[in-house]
Image 1 (tube, helix red, strand yellow):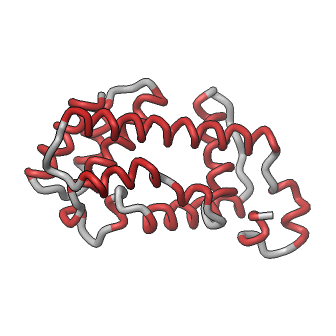
Image 2: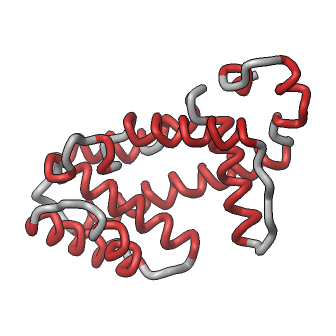
Length: 180
């Protein structure tokens, strides 16, 4: 099983760290739904805006968004992270085994370093391409759609933590206006 890559001993594997089928099913559905929302947001953007990006690159991103979430490095940790967030969103505490916290951190680092739509992928967010920025905002929109909150607030919260150029901020906001 994928979890063995992260855990060091058989004792740890037998100590109830392996996620349940319910957790795995939830992750599978949530991830598929998230990717579908991102794809729909990207398609919506491309149907409105015809220039300012490489169409073939953006089309490829529609097909490959967040594929790393199914990799050995991310799958099991993201199952745990998704379940923990689900429980918290439903007002329940969900204690996490310390080893799970470690593998989630490692998976998040892997995810950011494997996907150029995350600013952390780049040595400087000013180096993000238009395609990176468009996909990033479509990803943010998918999250705001899932949690039924304002994309504008999401953009403000997340974009202000980065050092984007004025042109990048303009693109981020215009993508947000289209896909919200």
